[in-house]
Each structure stands twice: as C-alpha cells, then as structure tokens.
Length: 280
Ligand SMILES: Nc1ncnc2c1ncn2[C@@H]1O[C@H](COP(=O)(O)OP(=O)(O)OP(=O)(O)O)[C@@H](O)[C@H]1O
Ligand SMILES: [Mg+2]
Image (cartoon, rainbow, N blue to C red; front, side):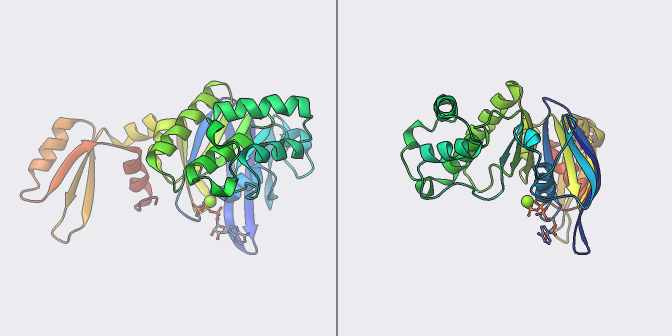
C-alpha cells in the first residue's frame, strides 16, 4: 500500500506538484496521464526518494519514503523516463551491475539474471552492448533491471515512449503478466490507449494536481458511449457525446452537410473533454 499525503513539490517559487493525496492499493495497475509539465515525473521522483517533497509525506507499507530508507527502496523498482543503462556494458553485464548495486550475492543473482533474460526475451541480445540495442529492446532491458531486486512495486515513467507499435505491445504483455503475478504498477504515459488497455485505475493530472481518479470504464461512462466528431465551417473539429447510438445518429442528422463521423467513445475523449487539449 502506498499513501501519498498532501504532497507538494516546489522548485524555487514554482509549484510542480500541488497538495496531492493518493492511496494506491497492493495489486493496483494505475496510470498517471497528463500533458508535458503536469508533474508526473516529479511525483515519481518523490515516490522513489530521488526528490524530497517540499510538504507532505509518502509512505510505502507504512514506512516513510526517504533517501536513507533502504527498507523501502528494496521494495520498489524504477524505470525512469530517460535511459539509465550503462552504455559500454552488454545487456547481461547491465543486469549483473544492477544486482551488485543491490548487493545481491552472486549465487542469488545468477539465477535471477537468467530468469529476467528469459522473461523479457532478451536472450538474443545478452552479449550486445546496450548502446547498440534498439529503443524497444533498451526499454525491455530497463524493465529487467528494475526487477532485479524482486520489487513488489514498480514505477515506470513513460515506458513505451518513442518505440514502435510491436515493441510497445510486447511491453504491454510483459507489464500485464507482472501485474497478474502480484506486482503493483504505477506508470505515466502520454498514450491514452496504453492506459486504457492496461490500467484498472487512471489518474488525470494537470498543473500539479490530480483532478480525476477512476477506472477507465467509469470515466468513459460518465461522458457517454458514442462520440460524434464533426467539422464546422471554420474548420474546427467539434465533439458531442451520447449515451446511445440512436441519439448520436439523430444529432448527426441535424448537421446538414457538415462532415462528421460517429464512433465509440474513448478515454481520449474524456481527457480532451476535461482539459480541452489533446495529451500529446
Ligand atoms: N529540477 C527542476 N527545477 C525546476 N523546475 C523543474 C524541475 N523539475 C521539473 N520542473 C518543472 O516542474 C514541472 C513538472 O515537470 P515534470 O517533469 O514533473 O512534468 P511531466 O508531467 O513529467 O512532463 P513530461 O510529460 O514532459 O515528462 C515542469 O514545469 C518542469 O519544468
Ligand atoms: Mg515526465
């Protein structure tokens, strides 16, 4: 269980995270969605003791998160937004290096490294320098690295940014399996489809605050089931949301000769409706 209690982070006078309260339960798969600068990375850095809150406290399993709290750090794994691999080491050596940072004994980590190479399907890349791997494989290696100490919670900051759709779906499968195996997952993403597919809980974040926190289906149902998307004479795209197809069609029929489409409502519609801007 993770408890975030009234957490604020200021950089000089600027408030990056603003009085956030959030409880995350064991086994949750939770997505933080928000535009650039919303405060997602700052929140993750506080959750992983890389930054200290200006105000408020964070507890993991009842213990306060802090730089010197190794008991807490042993429970968590982190996949940061930016590459954290040793470029001059091979994939295999990167995992061994990570194990040594956690002071794992050789007889314990040898098996773990093999297990991770197998689970992340990294066998073909084990002897390649990490700088020579593609972005998608590097991400998989970063996730493997975050799992080296058998964490019960993992934080991933935009785990699939800039990688192709096949590599992304591979990572989705891995994350789903990890969550099924009991690992609590919090990820940030700009890809709303990613949150919709993976997460059982989604938090919308903007300007340092979380303004919505619910399951994807509840968030969508609040707004409707169908979206009519149409173009005005001024070439503006407009959206209207309906609870059933019949009323969507009735509305579309009133649009005269305007171009329109009717489709199922997505989580992206919900975010757009709240913020009036696309996430990416
Ligand atoms: N070390 C810092 N010093 C000053 N300002 C900072 C620092 N770190 C972050 N900020 C500011 O805090 C705000 C939140 O940044 P953060 O990186 O948490 O956003 P984010 O939601 O992760 O955005 P992105 O989607 O672009 O990764 C931004 O306005 C950023 O410029
Ligand atoms: Mg970020």
